[in-house]
Length: 118
Image 1 (cartoon, helix red, strand yellow):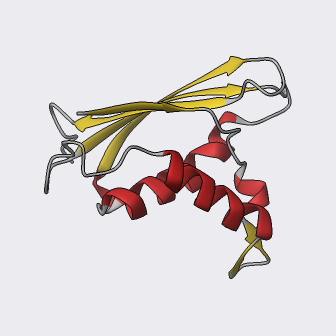
Image 2 (cartoon, rainbow, N blue to C red):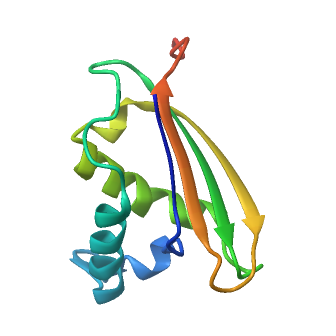
């Protein structure tokens, strides 16, 4: 199991890409900040198992879309902890309204108890 909370404003997927191929300056900076803020090590991520991801996101803008913060954050997680995000079969996301400057992402990655069957 992995659980952590970092106090960095989540970056929306709308600020991630320039056109179709290039990361924006905002995303490059966000990727660096988040990577440095995340706990080091593999932190018990099960190898080869189906995974579940729980995200609680504190956003100061009521107009921010919860789903837009998931993809860039998940991409950073997989890069940092060296797992393929195709193993994530379940994502539970919660949005909280917070004051400006109090934004955060809290997450948990765990083995999925019963992977979905076709």
